[in-house]
Image (cartoon, rainbow, N blue to C red; front, top):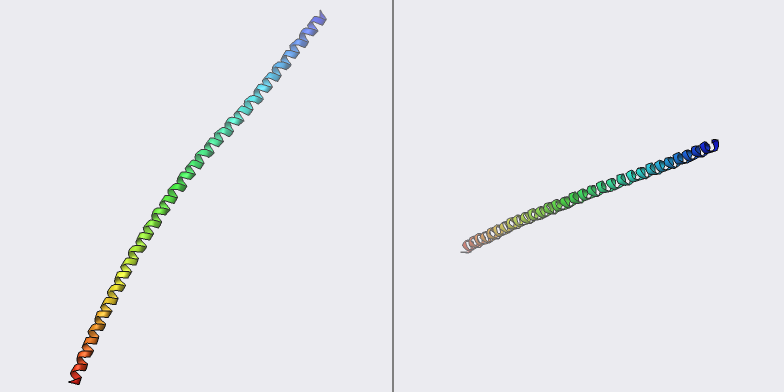
Length: 113
C-alpha cells in the first residue's frame, strides 16, 4: 500500500514537473512571440518614417527646382533689361556723337566761308 502511494506521489510529481515544463516553454514561446511582434511593429514604424522622409525629400527637391527655375527666369529678365539699357545708352551715345560731329562740321564749314 505504501508502495502504491509512493508510486502515485511520484507520478503526481512527474505530472507536476511536466506541467511546469509545459508552462515554462509556453511562457518562453509567448515572450519570444511578443518580442518578434514588437520588432515587426518597429520595422513597420521605421518603414513609415522612411517613406515620410522620402516624401519630404521629394517635396524639398521639387521646391528647390522651382526656386532655381524662378531664379533663372529672374536672372534672364534682369539680363534682358540690362541689355536693353546698354543698347539704349549706346544708341543715344552714337546719336549724340553723330549730332556732335555734324555740329562741329557745320561750325568748321562756317569758319571756312
